Image 1: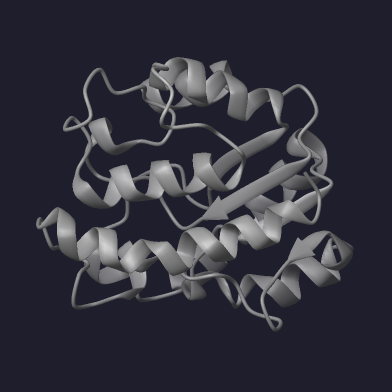
Image 2 (image 1 turned 180 degrees about the vertical axis):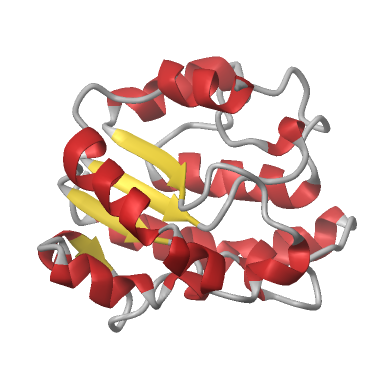
Length: 189
């Protein structure tokens, strides 16, 4: 329930770009819309993901701003981050697209009748099977893809660093991701 309240609080009235990823993290402290009180409250992967998205959207992390302020700026930019499933998925299931395909009808309804985004940026190759479903639903022109495929989140797709706790290994995995997100968003921001 807390996740829904936080997402609703930071949801833009008009969503320009919807960023879609597989599932929320298991730890509530790692949820994107949960403002951390300190830099070390989020896990290294969640911190890198949060910082990458905010930076790509033009957020200034070097300024002395709270995460709540940064999330409000992200909201004003018309960007919203959401998941295919509303509940965390076990680690083994993340590599299986089955749960996400089963959730597609519900997700498509949310996209078409609630979110109504101008653009959809899909993160994670596990969501590739959803692309034809989005196209069938008339959302194909809204998709922001790289060479017809979703961008990959290192935390979900880099098996060497998926469960790493060393912030250096996480930091090395995210610069390319950040650059790709920035390139995708910069065409429209």
